[in-house]
Image (cartoon, rainbow, N blue to C red; front, side, top):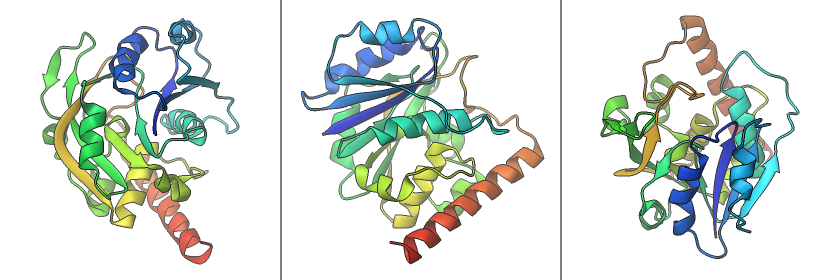
Length: 246
């Protein structure tokens, strides 16, 4: 069984194209878990218009306050979706991208006995025109904990993982960390992560993106230091918990 987890917020402009690229690839027992963070546009109306029982909508009610780190609200919304996912394999998806029509087949054929699979993607503009043919090449992506603390290669929408990973990953830390680097580093720690060059996604960049993946970072030095310190602290605490409280 497959679960596709999508966090949404005012995504009326793109959500239909994304769902249209995902739904034909699903089996009868698969599911799409959508966690909506209070959309005020037609996002929910568009989703409900599919009348597909495999699409399960959850409204995210924040239990934690907003944070200095802009990614934190997205992390919390995704955590809500993951808490409702029942699939053996979990795909993360953004509301504004488009999957290639073989993404699920290729990803499942390549993951092997690994805990997590990371694949490449093309980067497009708002209208879907290709800007960069390879995110991996643009980002100089590679595996390794140290390498990803310096330059993160984990892009959530390019990740598929076994539900087993959530036993360690959930709940997400109270310390603010991005969901994708959190999942990626835990998979790295397990020694069961694989990266493939297949470009299985059209990753859309536009003015409303809530992350800056695929672009140069515009954050300041203090922000970057605090960000990395939080990640290392959260990772060490979770590893120690796993060792001493299995």
